[in-house]
Length: 385
Image 1 (cartoon, rainbow, N blue to C red):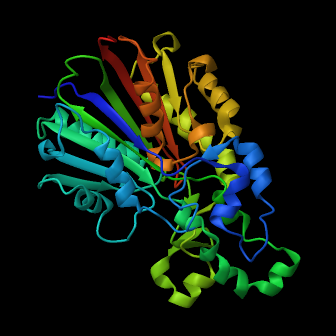
Image 2 (image 1 turned 90 degrees about the horizontal axis):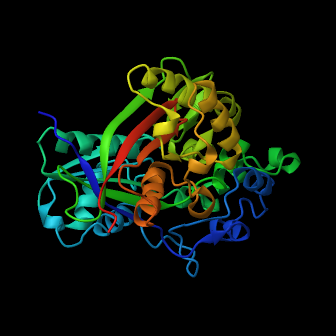
């Protein structure tokens, strides 16, 4: 028998002080010793004013890895009524794990040091935070676990440091004399992504006092049957197909900056709203009752403020024109933290005293990897006092 499941606590970890737009290149470094030509253009369009990096501003080196920042977010859930020793199920998702093997979640478990429990890793890009949450939700709903923690995290800054691109720059020095920048699909993302982690604690009953969020449903769709890869790392696009890193020797991997995150910006712009909003909501609205009047808060994760008006148009095209005064996002102040973003958005709203019992939240998380999308519906329950 499926039982209701409630988000009873939410925590976020954002390392170091916020990094402003003019500090970014100092923190990440200059590729080839030259300022990026794309930086100001990308920042002007994405609207992000500050973000967080694990890179220590004094030493210039990472002060935390992904498992550590995830563990810190999970520790933030600990309070009277919940200790790590009580945890039944831990699920963690990230697109930027510290290693290829073992899985990210067992590394988080190792950092936490709590007793043996079920531990599961979800992989992907932005969507793996939601898939982690769905696994945790289903574990509690099915009665397999008394409680569960889901975590989403990203440490993108270490992948975007200049030293990761210098081998490619030096190998192409003659070509770059006339075009002195790394490929735009790589440079573009250096000014889009940031670091952070968020975690939620789930139980089969709401908080005895205060508010909880009941998870009503989480719907996830992949459109990889229709769409090619758009955002990727550890691979090279060859004649429209990805060729993985293991097909190249170490020198070639360095020369091509193969481990860098890349994105086909045109493919993204042409399809992200059509596929992850319109096509996804057509399928969801065929099985779920969704009306604008019933949605009190819309929590969209989008990578850039450039997409805000286009997202509004996409919602209107499927007869769900949620007024923008009901939207809640912290992209401009917290940055684009990928798989952690929806947790960080929820944390600020949930812990900020703005929610009231009975209100309904609709969350939206797209992923451009090969075009996937998730929508999640939550209901606020409990007593504001």
